[in-house]
Structures are given as C-alpha cells and as structure tokens.
Length: 268
Ligand code: SIN
Ligand code: MN
Image (cartoon, rainbow, N blue to C red; front, side, top):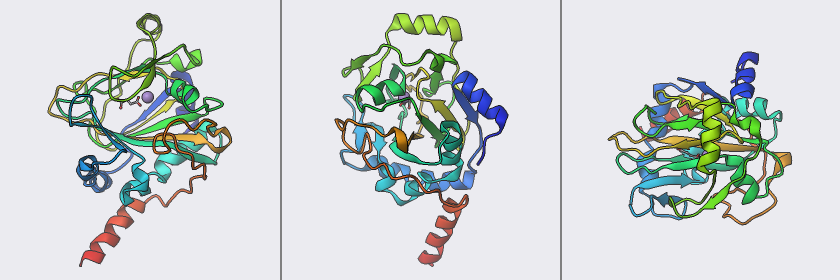
C-alpha cells in the first residue's frame, strides 16, 4: 500500500498519520481470534500490569504465532514505513500487542520511542518508526494514544529512566517539558475502529491514560528500523530489542484471507 505525496507531507509536518479502515472486518476477525490465547500464555514475552494479572504487552509474537507472523510482513503495514523511512531494507526492531485491558489497563507515560531506542539499544539515528494497527476500537474513553503534534521536530529530548510507575521501564519526559510542548502543539488522540492504522515518527512525544472502561484497547505495534541503522547495544532481550537484522520480505496483500482459506480447507 503506497502513501500519496499529500499523506507523506502530513506525516512529515505533524509526526503522525492516521488511516481508518485499512484492514477489513474479515481480516480483523482472523487476527483477533488469536489474541485471547496469546495473552493467556505464561511466558516471559507476555508481561502483566504492575500488581495485577491483566496482560500489558505480548512481545515478539510474530515468532510464536503463525497469524501474527503474517501481519508482521503485511504490505499494508510495511510498505508505508519503507516510503517514510526512505529504504526498502527494514527489519523488525520490536513487535508487540499492547492490551490496555478493560478496567486494568495502566498508563504509558509521556515519552519518545527514539529515547529508549537510543539510550537502551544504541540505535544510531531516529530512522525507525511505529506502525500501529488497532485490533480493537480505540475511543475517547479506553486510553487512546495521545500525541503532541509536531513534537518530533524538537529532536531527542532529555529523558529520565522510569522503572517504577508501570511494569515496563521507559525513558520518560518531565512535566515541565510536556507542559511547554502542549502549550505549543496541543494534544490529539486519533480514534477509530479495528483495522485502523496509525503511523508515527520515532521522535513524536506520546502517552496514553489508563482504561477504566469495559472495552480493552488492543493495539499491535510494528517498530520498523532501517537495516543500515541497526542497534549496537544488546542490553535488552532480543524479544524486546531484536538482534535479527534480516530485511523483511513482504507477503501478498491477501495473505490473511488466503491463510484462513487454507486453514478452513485443511479442517474439512
Ligand atoms: C507505546 O508508547 O509504546 C505504547 C503506548 C500505548 O500502547 O498506549
Ligand atoms: Mn511509545
């Protein structure tokens, strides 16, 4: 899936691009059928909220779930990142499903992803980005992602390592800096149905609140990096900061539907 010139300009100006309904309800059903079983697994890659059994994130799922292995190579997710990062040689730096579980989903503090990629993983430049696929609806109540538009233009900001607020350590930005940035740029929270795609720059400042609703806000994140910008420090486990820098080979656009057909005929 190719972005238009106007969409590329919008991403460069604002630091994000929201595309509702990129995947069909049928494709989303194929993916979502897997999710409860993924979060139910007891393994290192599935982390729980602090002080609760609710799932927070499931990492590296593309290596241990066949269907998510397909979506990790999906052209509707990978090709726009190739355009925006200016290379057709990208690898998967991180792959995770964030649950933001009904009633229990906790915050993600204000941060830039590149701060973590730089400080923890020694990624040379902010030439990596996130492609988020909404597995569930994100609405104004269930802890949608919040962005400060244009904040990616500030470059990498000072950050402190927060290891206590949540179960996931993060390089976070102090309240005074956030206040200044929000006074300049405001806050947006793109909301939409399952199948929506949200692309965002490695340096855009973002966060999300807790989820007090009965609606889990499942989002899949592909963090794609240019192969010529591979990380140089291997402090975090490979399932959090991947050390396999093999370029992604995209699958056909209908790979999810074809997979479901193959599975149905094998079951007959
Ligand atoms: C992230 O910033 O990496 C995740 C935020 C969220 O899922 O709300
Ligand atoms: Mn982030």
